[in-house]
Length: 247
Image (cartoon, rainbow, N blue to C red):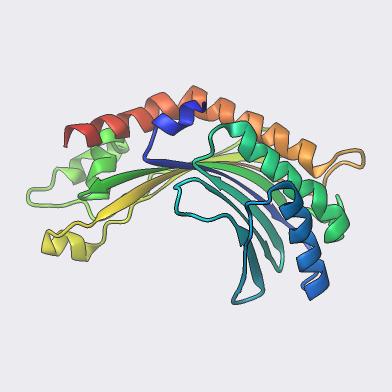
């Protein structure tokens, strides 16, 4: 089992490969790619197209945990929602990247960026922005502003982005997506919405000549999990979980 499952109402592990050149968009190329994916994951059988050249293959969503993949003009995405274990999600992302060079002619040179993201959703009926301030605090220089008599927090966007090497090619970012609007605050009617926490590790630039996309992704995933476990769980996720439980 996966320890991430207990840290939020939902969690997900996503991979994005952004390319410098356009990916093939022909019928044969797209279908061949997804047919190869489906051979390894037969339950991924829902295929459809969206606007602007985006094609999707996914599992049924009614069980609460499912896989999905997309091809966009310059991006390949793979996501697993509430996977039983992290290895299941990473095996899926490896599959997406192992097939791409052959089915979509993706060269190691053609990498604008590759990233792995772990996200957590917390279902909460109330002001998400006030929840973030209460659970995580705010910059000391802004604390007195939050104490303005009669004021209500309408927006807070805590985020931190770090370079993890001297060349700034490997970076990580912690960000939040509250879903409370001024309308909710004005009316006092707060729908049950999900507050999202995202932690992303991203690598920029082409791969080395002897490097594969799957191997590069695995290294990013290991780093992502290490940083989440070491710096995000105790200082971000558990405080949010605690404050929500007291409301």
